[in-house]
Amino acid sequence: MTTTADTTRKDPFPFFQEHHYDIRDMVSRYAAEKLAPRARMLDETKEFPHQTIAELKEMGLLGVPFPEEWGGAGLDYLSYVITIGELARACGTTALTVAAHTSLGSNPIYVFGTELQKEKYLRRLASGEILGAFALTEPGAGSDAGATKTTAVRDGDEWVLNGVKIYCTNGTHAGTVILTARTGGEGGTNGITAFIVERDSPGIKLGTLEDKLGLRASDTRELVFENVRVPDENRLGELGSGFKKFMQTLDAGRISIGAMATGLAQGALDVALPYAAERSQFGRKISAFGAIQERLANAAMEIHTSRLACYHAAVLKDQGHNVNFVASLAKLHASEAAMRVIDSCLQILGGNGFSREYPIERMLRDAKLCEIGEGTSEIQRIVIARAMLKSLG
Ligand SMILES: Cc1cc2nc3c(=O)[nH]c(=O)nc-3n(C[C@H](O)[C@H](O)[C@H](O)COP(=O)(O)OP(=O)(O)OC[C@H]3O[C@@H](n4cnc5c(N)ncnc54)[C@H](O)[C@@H]3O)c2cc1C
Image (tube, rainbow, N blue to C red; front, top):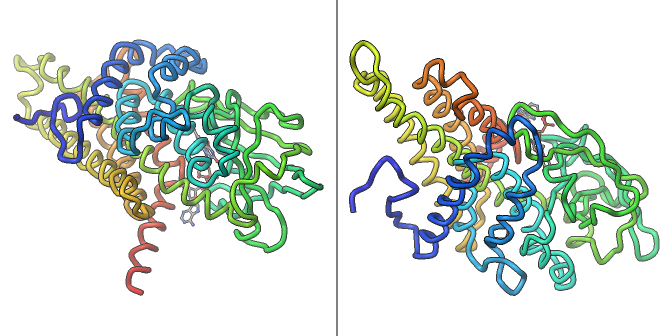
């Protein structure tokens, strides 16, 4: 089989088994037919994609990496990463909504939860009955997530939560929010514990709904917790282990943000390649100009290396390895490459690239988040350098 520029829809991949091709083809077809035509409308109206989420639920795409016994599709993390890439190729908002639900809002319950928590929440999350959210960031705790001020105070068999979480993806529509709170005892990050909170619990107030540069229909919400009571059975893991658990959750989540960036970059190249082959100036197709060929070749190279980095990290995760280093590498490379690729593809379209008639300007705005969410590029570099230095012993 020959390989082509279309490295997701046709090409063979040495990492892939039959089910990886199947899910790639299914999601790619759905995204091209249903999501691409809706993406501009979502960007303009900022309306949460309820219809899309209902369709993804029917297709079993809201619990891709979770076992069937817990309501999931029974596939692996690589299948999930492929899914996010194909969704992002057509619609960044949809990709982020699914990524936040799956790797941040559901995966911690699968990895760290008790049988009871899985029965009560994971089954409903993985089947898509409810959406999940993850609330780590606070007004004073962004990159420095250990600066959490939200508190949880024990009262009998319950905990009483007070604090403010910001930028919570899916915060308005989620059934559950997994959050960190300071439970006293030790200071620093060892005094932080994770909890599963039902979104409609009394005392949770909806704060600011962010009006954003991109991913405009993705729900980014401030949540205010005022004396919210949570049973101790909803504590996720040991007392004081919450920060570590959230960092492990982000390791896995970062692979999907890399995949989202790669999908957005591929989406831009999907538009720029045929455009360059069609558009004529100076009596020739612009694809005949060396400057345009260089842009196309560089875009293909960056997308290819990004995709390989994300798939590599996903396979290592499926094999049970610690992916802290490779996930940060994949996210950092893919998100920065996506900004370069999409900017370059926009340039190939000239004035049309700048126009909202074409989707590339939206993809550029959407991709910026990948350099910020789940740890900024600066934080990824710290993670990577720290891991390298640690390996020296
Ligand atoms: C659309 C969107 C969705 C999000 N969804 C979620 C979500 O679902 N749940 C959640 O908990 N959070 C979410 N976030 C929050 C996101 O994770 C944070 O915005 C991000 O971690 C950065 O934190 P900050 O915005 O406070 O920036 P800051 O930490 O204030 O950083 C500002 C700048 O300083 C730099 N900086 C900070 N520390 C260092 C350092 N030590 N060395 C070098 N540079 C540094 C940063 O890289 C950045 O450039 C979301 C954000 C957005 C925009």
